[in-house]
Length: 441
Image 1 (cartoon, rainbow, N blue to C red):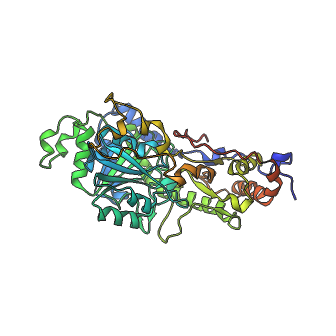
Image 2 (image 1 turned 180 degrees about the vertical axis):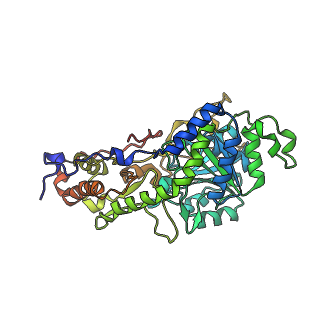
Image 3 (image 1 turned 180 degrees about the horizontal axis):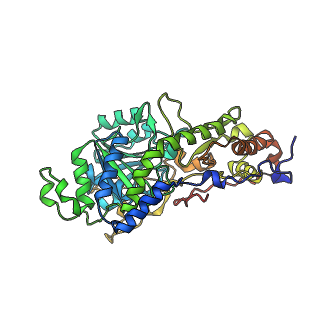
């Protein structure tokens, strides 16, 4: 039996994975297209952006696409697009990046957080339905860490209660749920395309929908210069100014990178998918859940922010933090304990008066007599404790068997010798972060 490195033994993984996980993959065409835009002085136009929208909509199998300055602005525009406003409620899973929900506060809506499923890490349909009130206007469904959310159940509940569905596809561009592309199932989808995401173009985001009214409302909200495309009655009379007071157009350096990414993204995702499945196949006999959909036709596309699920009972109560520390000591790279902190536990949701209204902003616009005692700590047990079960794994971009085998060996060595760690386990709990810094490659 090999002595664990954390206890003074030799580590099993010695090769750096830095070159393998570097992202995005830049080619000559991307470089030349960016230089061309710079030389033309065409950074702030819309011609290239509109072409990117056309091509992205074709690829994502939607009728309309609207490119914006960030994924956050897309989510806000999607919320406005479905009519979310003063006094409405938006349901969102508590375990996600803050942008999935917080823009609702700028529209005068109240965010109601729901719990997640411990296996998928996505919105729990039963908890979603439990939190619906007569004021619920929309739900944000996050395909968290590239895992497709259970859209059949969520859509059935939403349609039953006449609730609009916003898909947050920031983690899962190009993924499928039971054969249907993510972003085409709900009423509208929004996604980040910043440089850390799977579909990486720099800073930027994109909204996709098949609903013309949602599309025009989103454009009206933050695109003053595209007045000619807003034609629906009730909207056209307001064109010419950004009705949200925001300027959300995409920088054309990002747009031109996006056009080049569309040409190679699917093939790059295929390589990533093969590499990540090879990693998990090397650990399939261990009691670690690969956080991978089992449904036929469901995929993780680019495997953004890839996770595993740890069961401490399978390791006699060994804490996740100590298990991961031991893997890192063996030369494991890209591993980390935890995930996003539960958003409903942050003071912003409960007590902060953002706009000087004299009461907490998140519930300021609820009608008199409405229950403001929502998002209570302890009410979402999975989201509040998932950081002690979810862990990050290396995000391989190239299928290098020898390199991946070393990382597999690091995990296997710890898993096969975990008993040696039980006596020295400090039993540290993992505290999630409200802001996840970008992964350093």
